[in-house]
Image 1 (spheres, rainbow, N blue to C red):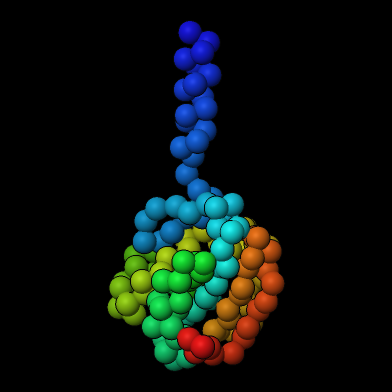
Image 2 (cartoon, rainbow, N blue to C red):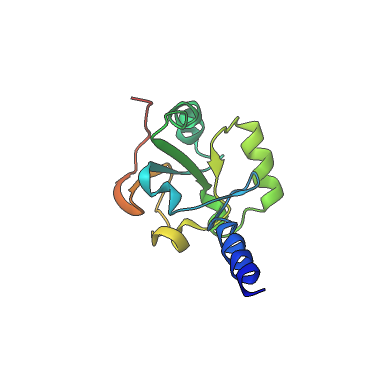
Amino acid sequence: MRIILAALIIFLSSCQRGDLEISQGGFLSSKELSNEVVVLNIWADWCPPCIKEMPYFNKLDKLPEVTVLGFHFDQFDLLDEAELIVLIEKLGMDFANLKTDPRDIWGIDIPGHVPTIIIIKDNVVVKTMITPQTYE
């Protein structure tokens, strides 16, 4: 009986969901992302450069060693989830948008403006870019 109980505990602990909840549904694990370059795109629908960048981030997310994650600037304080999903679909965002506040995972501050792109490697912020980006 103890063996069955121990096996059940090991099985259930291996099935734990990740610590990053995704707005489009599901979870990711920040530990599993530590072997990849994470590009955190803090965006807003009222930011023209942010909208222009969406196809670049969609393309970048297809690279095997890169994971692009979005987070709408207004999620920090006032954007409702249903409205966010409409915006994600409207803008054709193919990459995951975080529901989990990135401050809770990577200890970042709320950026002063958008777009803000934060590069994370081994779960450590290595670079922050505050100007519009191109795919290159």
